[in-house]
Image (cartoon, rainbow over all chains, first blue to last red; front, side, top):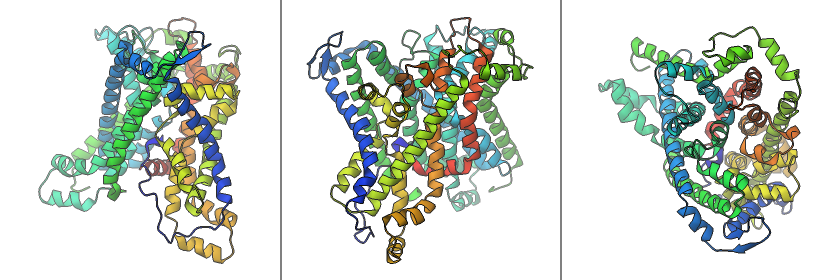
Length: 307
Length: 282
């Protein structure tokens, strides 16, 4: 989703912007969105911050204010540090795999003359597959009991059991997550490639640069803004939207080998019912997302001339 | 093409075909599995061609023994998911186009305050504040309702942002001309703004429909009653890898049924979808 879309850089309008003189109507127009934002955004967000400083007794009957104790215990918890590491590995692997595959396919699609539309159609539809279903399909292919590909792997002599082996479980969720994201990256890279002026590439060709050289010295640098944007989007995707994959495929296991940050927030909040700890994790997550977004805005500024 | 290199073009076609095979294989395999009887699926490797149980399996998945997914029919689950996806898409578009209209075409006290209130939500998906949002839904008594399933997912500024960006490109002369001709804010909205925004609305519709259809964490939390599950949650509940009872041929048929509607929307509305995706993410 477009949650990381470019932030509105300019907030003032030209002085001569024509507007309607009505003074009351705009409040009515804004009312639905403001109401939803207050109830489902500001209220929960402030609750998250409040709860992150409370400690409840196990029965939820009373709670007391503990300042930053929850944060301290979260950051000292080996389980949390483990899920930070898992998230980092998972996100980097997923983003890298999905970006490289997307870029490769886009470069190839940009090179062919015939059938580009058909290739595009055939490549974009995994966008419509829900992450949870993507996970289930991959688990079905690779589950040790009856997955055909697991069967082939065993024939090749691989001791394949993602339900017991943490590394293999990670490989499986990364593959499923990246598979689903390739089509998205492909579309953006293709749009980016088609926006590169033909004359630049032609000039380099006349100067004797071959296709490989042209790609690395002209095309790839000009794609940098797209790549950076996609890197942020893919990271956010790996952080949040892959919850369904993890939940459906591994449930965070085996032995927490695939427990990402969002999965842990869910697990501590809804399964273990440790509200204060879960809320503190939510607040840390919000801080991470805001930091990511700020970084993105700074780079977005530089890419306006491509838009 | 800069220079004519048949070999490199052939290579490109080859890579694309391999890519398509990898992209399509899991779904093709699911389709194949959905057309075989259960015992074929349980003894790998599965044949690469569809079997002869296609109609029986889909018939059973759609109309067969109630009680498989907690006593709820697949039809009901598909209906729920359609309601959720449509409500999110339509609701968000209506809410956003109105608020973007107010912010761009009117001047009023506190305009900037509202502007920031809305746009700060761009950054934070519902997954980040999942526990407190769930508590809000509980205290409003919205568990197991379509309202609870959809409204919180509309609290984001992405669509508003897209409409605002588009409205800013509409020349002031147009507004001026409309006003000279005696059109008030309602007439201007209905006769100028809506027709001009048609492509944006279509693109957003595709993106938001997919977004709604593929939701997982939120429906998982706010539905206790199996009657209110979405198809994806229902599918998850059908599967148990540890347990030999899973009716895999029916799971596969249901998975295909859950995949078809969003894929049709994406493929048929491809032109708007691509345009909308690339413009809204810029």
